[in-house]
Length: 221
Image 1 (spheres, rainbow, N blue to C red):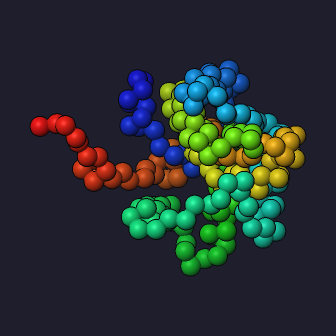
Image 2: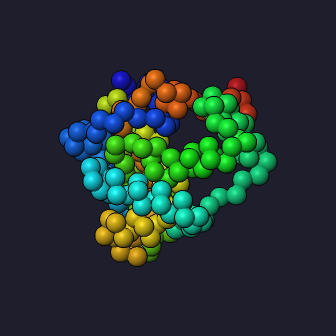
């Protein structure tokens, strides 16, 4: 699979087989993530790769926080969207609810869905991306580039991913379980595993705006 094919075929996977991803495959994926460019080669990213009993403990702890009614309190403020950005969010959200047959009139159904987001959609492996508190918001751009490298490399190996802010909604839990200092700020969780293609949650694809609405050309005939 070449890089352009990976870009066009990759999608967020929300249903996984239980089989863990072999460590050597994960190492290959992380090597690609570490090749990302960054501001003045500062390489602000750090990765905690989760598997086995640790992954189980993290999922259980994050689920317990949600079930206890704890409000998310991310290290970086949750964004507030308006206008076309909110409309794109709502449009695909409504389609996701329909295709996955989630019941909006059923609080338990929605609660289970929110819990599944916090717990990496029950993927067998996960990555928590974090960076030092001394870094500025510009380093978040570098973190995003590294995350994309990771997800494209995973796809080349047949490994599905889903980037999840919900998985870092309780950063103090992650710092405690992963023995990380307060100076490390949780940026993003990424679920990893082999897609369970029998589930609509693994085949759903979000929409994309046409080029004409987002790209302008300057200096071309």
